[in-house]
Figure 1 (spheres, one colour):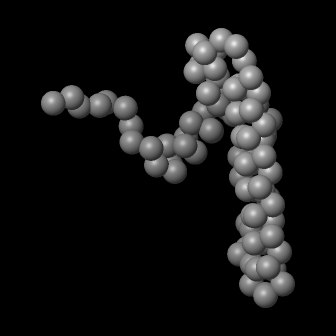
Figure 2: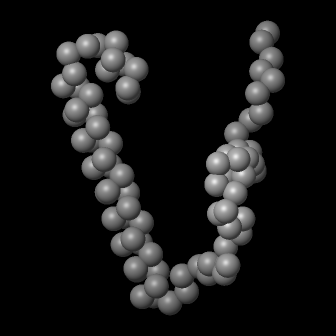
Figure 3: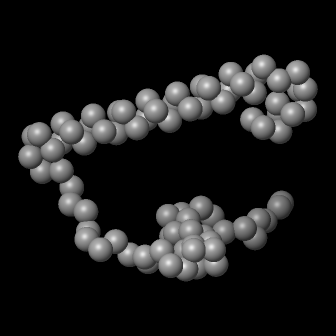
Length: 84
């Protein structure tokens, strides 16, 4: 049986990694938001939130598709595998 000594991914781990990187490379960044965000409350806010999230997901998908297409055009299979 193999036991991993790596920490299990949780949100706190990701935040700790992010804090470590920003402290080292960008210590001038704010550590906390100036204002806490509030969840959408009105029907219009909820509708705008959904539209924003869908548009963001579509944009991300487009970027992934473009990158995948370009990687697929490369003649070197090892480079394709590395980049993917």
